[in-house]
Image (tube, rainbow, N blue to C red; front, top):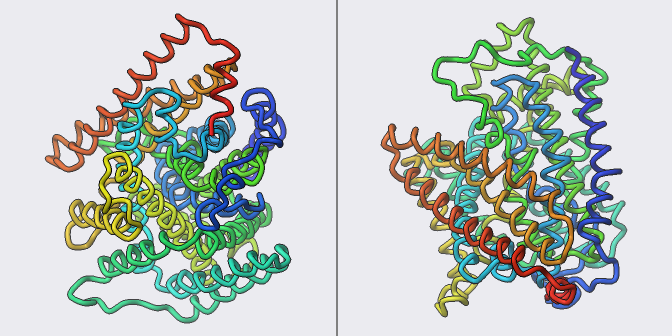
Length: 567
């Protein structure tokens, strides 16, 4: 099977999503209004609420939601076969993720840029907010622990990625100040990306590593502590200083990286040697249904996107129609990363047969980022003639930078939730930025080291739990958007249909995994799974009650208008 055909079909699907389906949803369902005054203009505090150029915001949003998950998830899921992985990535991005991300951004903007958990109180009810925020907090806890582990692992395994990953920070700060000074956006983008690629070259020639015993810790544990210290500081800075420009320039770098990877497919013309449907799975391999749909979360649909859309991006939305560009196109961008990951892992490992592919793939354990870096590096070398070490450093840096920007946003969002709890329950200390950040980072470290021991590798252990929780949250977000649409007397079937499917798959998968955790006596994971499921079920019951009342009582036009204009 030619990888070119897969790429062409996938890109054709994404094109339909952008030019046809997203326009229909934006104009006929969400009815994005260019005259609506967004919270970024209403508040405009220069810290969190900042009206932002849609291209800059797209870059910030895209890299915050992308992380390493659209690489790791597809690279693992291809073990069931590349056909189901490609279908879920393509259809999930077009009909699920784009609608979800744009909807969360729009709904939050219509409610004063409240987080999806906070606005659930306005849409469903007061009790829902507390339950929703528990699920969101637990997901953020897992996201930060998972990506901290991924970054640390790549820095240990590929030390050539260390210098460019940290050099990106001063570059981002400089770009942030230049954007603030209204400098030419195209010029600083070209210069910034050029500098980033130069640091990648330097890194490939100058690998850096921590001592094996650093302050009494191994290298992996030390990197995790350093990363969370950085994330704590970054999360308290104004968004325009580091978060926004770092995300933007990483987004620009990803666009260049995607162009190089997709171009390599047409230059190298690799054949897909992985099985279309794998009938040689190892004993004990779990069923594709439902686990495919939670293994590939980001890249097809992700609840984390709803948190970012409603937690940070909605505070920076300049005009309401920008929600389509930022939210839907951001989801398609992530889908395109997942698609090229599948090609890199299934075709560019350069196996001669499905049997040989199995042997090569097994060398990477469960696939993951390492398989993408190796396969993608081969693709860039074969297609563009890049030195293989430079090509692998480029992709490893890409993984590290995306996971890092997700951590930046994740810790900031955790702080927001803790501060919201401080306001709800009148706990003064939790309203403080520093104290809330300390609680956020401390809880992440407890999970990373509590589940993973002295190495801090808890993120690897909780990956399946992260996937299930992520998809449960995505279905709950679609549920909130659906009820909001119903109250505005608009069609909700375009959000309810994907909500029902994803909810069934994620709850089913969560129950399967819970049984595995119980049998393996992984009690921390059992407790977390039970907490997520109970809170989610209670949210769903509250929502069903609201929907039932709406059907019984009917909705007046006045009520819809009142909710639509809520800020």
